[in-house]
Image 1 (cartoon, helix red, strand yellow):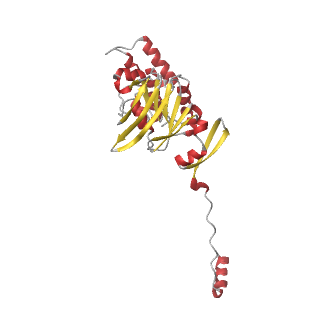
Image 2 (cartoon, one colour; image 1 turned 30 degrees about the vertical axis):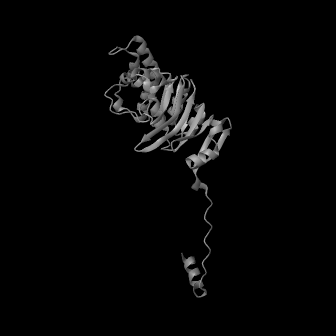
Image 3 (tube, helix red, strand yellow; image 1 turned 180 degrees about the vertical axis):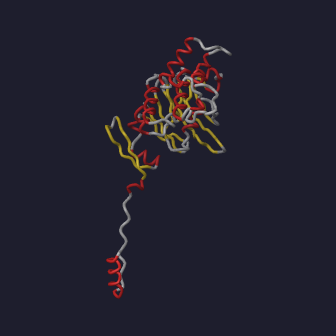
Length: 282
């Protein structure tokens, strides 16, 4: 399912946080949105799942304006995993994951055997099968993050939105999550801070700065040392093969030239001997 952002502008607090941004996400591709904090990544994503309404421009899913869809139609098209899962769930893990099936039910419809199978499979993929009876509020941040992934998977929407999906996850689960979503065959749009994850798992990278899209294309073409330096304000070394880069970062100041040593002060000849004796005795 194709997603199109057409000249989208979003205004919050009287300021444009997304500016005239246009982007087409082809069906079945994994697209990473990267950029510094405040660059507009999350705000752009929120227009897709209708948490924000653009001041100008439109967002289309398979040619249909998302604002023209009913709530049920929108939920059947787009599933969302947020960067900060809610902590006030008074539900078990299994019950929370099962909420992903709600858009597929008639009002007050009960879970079918097929629903339960899909929920079980989603929990298995997210590696939370052993947590099914736990209350969500008792889980760690990383565990809650995986519960939200399972709920999004159970929703079976053709478009999956991930807003900082690696938040709270350890390194192993970050890679497992991205590997899982890449293998789904769905259209995936993820806002990412980790450029190494973006380069490894995304087909296409979109770079935002100050609310505007400043670069777009395959990771190897977009994530260049020059762009990283100017956009993120860090120096970078590219390791590994050009087709499979690994980035090592450090602030500019970390390798700046050391200050030259101070010129030796002139010693008053009358006190030279005293100075030397003090140095010796110390």
